[in-house]
Image (cartoon, rainbow, N blue to C red; front, side, top):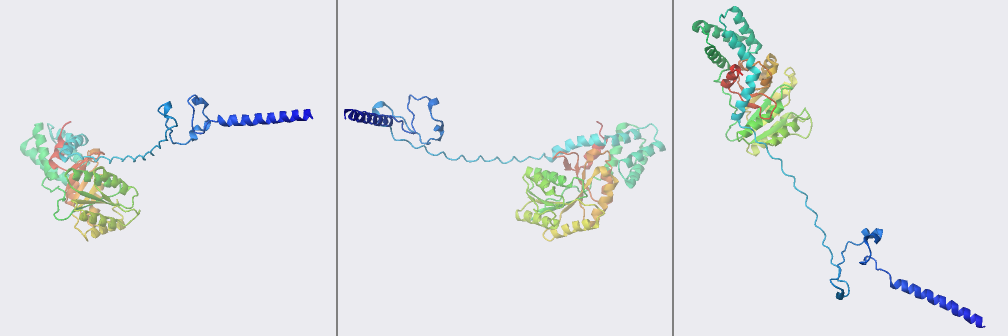
Length: 400
């Protein structure tokens, strides 16, 4: 009986010890979400980063008793996206500055033409062989048969009468005769100062002459003259034409009217461009048309339609034909056909720096009876300038 009592006491003692142990362990547990100062950062549990974002402020001193109430952090305001700065508009070079620079380029490209004539006319004995060489030089410069004959007759007469030998006197004579052929009396101004409505300029030409680029450069010329311009991308057949023209316009702050539909009616686009110019009281509306071969009658008929549709709301003040100077006499054939379809009022002669055939200016003017109004002498955005007959001839004869 005594052994049973002893066994029961031992069992009760073991149970009591286990209960006390559990109570002691629960009493010393660290509350979740806080870290005692004595615990190193390396001893923190791996999931510490997943703890609440609420910051718990430590008490200012030991006598403060219980921990202060937590301060809730204000949510950070989302940062406003930075506005992209508007692209700076380009300032086109003034026309006066262009002329001097372009003249220097013209001197380099056409110098052979002028030097050949001066050398021949300064010969001690200007016989028939020399005159034949002069004629060949003029024809190779694309002056054309009729103007060449006319110039030779004048030169022969003056040499016979004046007996020229002095190089400077020869230069003066040649300058006078060439200037007369280029005809400085022709009105080369662009008709862009119409009262009460925008001036409408239609730009035409064959494929590959740089027509869209020329329209963009012309916009820069007009902006440099403080004109308010609207562009019309009526070349709806070449996929990149509207985008290309829009880029040219955006560089100088000029809007472009175009169609989102590839192959849209070009006459409709031209009409909308003129409407926009009238609505916004612009100074000039320039319409770029699709390049077309002069021997394709249906395409040429369509060009006539563009002009007729535009004229339903406004007169077309300028029809500028863009020609590539390097094509020589072929450019004359192009010019004839375009002049039959639309009333060409002026010529834009591009790539004049790539040829020594300065006589093409005279030939085209004689063929169409209209003046060369603008010339292009390079690939730069401001390499287009109003044509000046006196400066052109001076550049032909100027020595490098």
